[in-house]
Image 1 (spheres, rainbow, N blue to C red):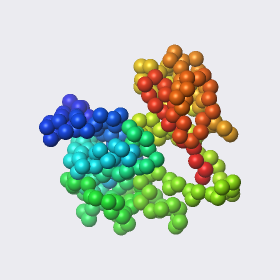
Image 2: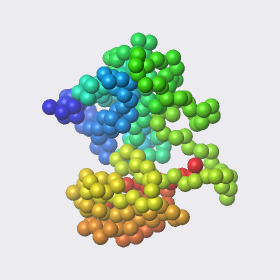
Image 3: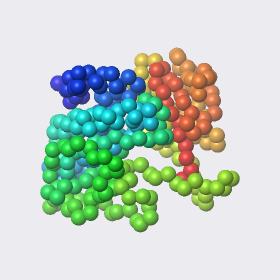
Image 4: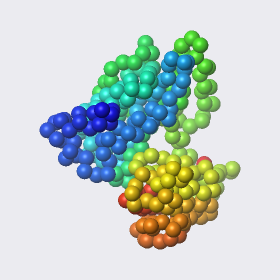
Length: 287
């Protein structure tokens, strides 16, 4: 039986169906669990032939309404998610630097039903895997920022050298993998050398747009694959620019941009694109 299936079955028996009543929005426990698995896979670091280290400290950011609804159950849900991460790591032969923790946090920039996962590696004194503990209230303990080992942590003999720490002033510490937003410029002012970053968010997962065009579709040949029966193989294409635009590529079900059925539309930061039954959020920011 798969790790996610076991996780779902454990949740079914918790607190007389409480979670079945709580999770009625688009955010489902198994979606968050799947995102944690991907976070481990995407940030696995090979220390040597026999040891691959993955993050052990996770933050699940939720919209304000979702956070308010789930916060009374955060401890229990965090424990279950931490247990799922441990089971998945055992299956993949991953190891941890310290105890596994999963905390919920409120993110005011997310719409209801969207979530975002951030992670980092925190070492215990013994630098060995330890049982998960209940998520702590407030901010996580300070330590090595995302992608960097905690202060004083040493790799095992024969391991490749640790990456250099970021230079002083390069964002706030403990970055959890997402760049900190730049300070807002004065109205009408443009920061010297500033460039616009573009990305999309699908079911809480961020996809950077690093090229001039990005094709969305159900085909594995699409730049971003959307597993949705209502999405065509090559459904639509986003073109970055001033302004950025989206173009339907002759899809069966078309596209809806900010509530309007269309074949072509201009995109702004926060535009909601619906393809099939999937909502895509377009984002852009200076810096």
